[in-house]
Length: 388
Image 1: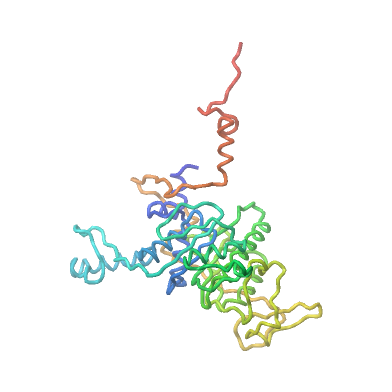
Image 2: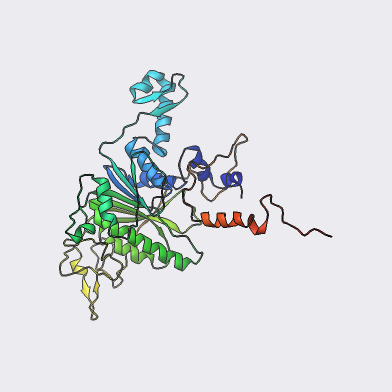
C-alpha cells in the first residue's frame, strides 16, 4: 500500500503530516484534553512509552510554547475571522490575536507557561523535542525513579545510603500519560493481557510520582473482565472514565482510561521493588479508606473492597465497578475508519519524523542481504538460469 492510498484511507494520518505531528496519535491526546481539560493547572508531566514522541510533541507545543492547537486553535481562527469581517484588523489585534501584514493568516498569541517540566521515557531512542527531557529507561525498573526526579528537579539528590530512595519518590507530578502498547499478535486474549501488564507498570510508576489530585491517562484494550481493572483504579482515583477519541478507529479495541483526582489511601506507600499487581495486596490494617463499611475478610484471608458506584443503596455481592464510557470528539470531525476523497492537487508528504530505531530494521537489513523480497535482485528481477 502506497502513501497516497494510506492518505486517502486515514484522514488523520494525512492531517498529522500536514500539521507537523510525528504521528496521528497526537489527535487522540488533543481530543482527550478537549473533553477532560487535562492540561489545566499542569506544569509537571511525565510521558511514558513516549516514542516516537507525538504526545510529547503535543505537550511541548501546548504547555511550553503556549500554542492553542486542535479545536481550540480552530475556534480562535474562526473568532478572528469573525472580528476581521466586522471591525477590520484593528479589532483582531485588540482581541489578543496577531495577523500577518496582508491579513491572510491569523494565529492566537502564544501564552507559554512558566516552570514547565516534561519528561519522556521509553526504551527506544527518541528524537529530541524543544523543552522535553528524554530518558531511555525501563519504566518497571526501580532505578528509573531517581533519573525521573533528577530530570524534573536538577537539585534533586537521592541518598546513596538509603535503598528506599530509588523506589519511594516525592510526589511532584501533576499528570502522567502513557500511550504504550505491545506489538499485537492477533490473539486478543494474549494482547489484552500483555497490555494490562504494561498498564500496571505505568500505574506503579505513576503512584510513585503523582501528587494528590493528579491525573493519569493510559491506553487500554477493552475486553472480557476489564471492569475489574476499573475497580482497581477506582481505589486510588476519585473519578475513572473510559474514553474513546474520534481519531481512534472504531474497529479497534483500544480506548483510554482517564483517572482524575489521585487520592492514595492513608498509609499507602508506592514502590517499584514491590509493585501492585505482582502478588502484593494493600495492608488493610494500616490503610483507612472511606470504604470501611464495604470491607469484607473472607475465610481464606483475602480482603475484598467494594468500590461500587457512589450511592446510598446497599452494595450487592458483586464488587465490580463499571466505569462510564465517553466518546470524545464531535461528529463534525473525520471518521478514522472511513476513506475520504483527496483533493485534486493533493501531494503526499513524507513523515515528519522517520523512525529512529524501528524494530523491523534488522529484518530490512536481512532482506537487502538476500537481494530484496522473496529472493529478488536489487533491480526487482528474479535471477533465472540461462539456457545453453
